Length: 257
Image 1 (tube, rainbow, N blue to C red):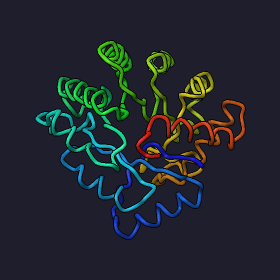
Image 2 (image 1 turned 90 degrees about the horizontal axis):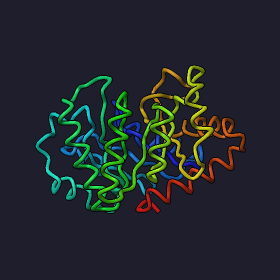
Image 3 (image 1 turned 180 degrees about the vertical axis):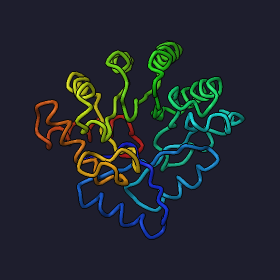
């Protein structure tokens, strides 16, 4: 079984497409999917998707792009939205200095709020980090010193240093379809070196489709190709990487068991 640890099940023709997308994922051997929240004020919509399918779960949180518009969301509100059996993670939240769509002070405040929610609930924090490696690593190290919390660096494209520092804190690193791109040799080098027990694969659907479908809308069934390339990168069989990443998924997202 493969699991897609991060996907956005959000399509223009939502009602007509959703069932088909999930069925294609199942046919490809995807056993669990986690669809990711990007706005607390839309958490009900994300939970409704998860409630529709037994094998789909969700997270709740505010993406750093939306940190400014949800700067008034309180910790209590975040905790309340997470209090649902289909919610298996907090986030995604973090820092994005590439687009800077959310004010940096709002991004940081939101990141800290989500860390505290993860710490209090025990649910893993899904972390978005783009061109902010040093600040993300420093915050994770500082906050871990105040009390442990589980987390994953999702759609990882950062430095080897960030990956190592995250793993040293007990975090996970998740690779998307970017891993399959010819230009991503440095990313594959990082994936080859990390401890097997800290690896995950994901789609980040509808973005970043793996090589054979690059430029098309991504979907959970395609995560099998990312897993294949990860296996090739690490010199193991696809079955071995499927078993390992599935085990890692259930260890991290324990509420999805």
